[in-house]
Image (cartoon, rainbow, N blue to C red):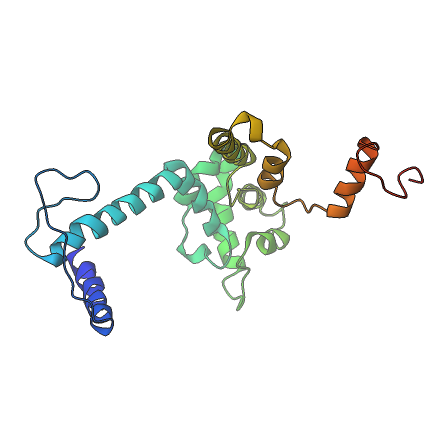
Length: 221
């Protein structure tokens, strides 16, 4: 931490010198609620304790929450890809044992799978290509692991996305009064991937409310 902070702080000092800014730290007091109030002797220590350390702690906690033990065990299955297989071992695939058709032959099968790609100059580096080049009869366990790894989600699941949409709706409801809410606007904002054609909106409104707007082709359509 000290080594990296020293490098970062030296770059900041160079940038401050170019902008003619004097490095300084806020004064400390007995009670402070609006900003960090860490007692430090130097400016460098102050920014280390108020910026660098909290930032790294936050990043580590987010990485741990995103990549827990289960995710790490599952991601080990990616080492069965031919481009990465020299670094793998049979123990890396313990997570998939319950789903394999013949787990007792996994070690021998992995040995044959490695030999298959030993002399290849350009082995597959992604799951789809590896799956296309994997014979399910000769390598049933490898084929099964590749299929499982191929359906791993790379982003949030659909249920988590619905929660984020509900959060948008709640934020909108809390920030507006009932008399000025337009439910259609929040629908458009929540589903931004849907393109809205203004002409179609006008025509739909004209058909549903023919007395409020007069268009020449309402009856014709």
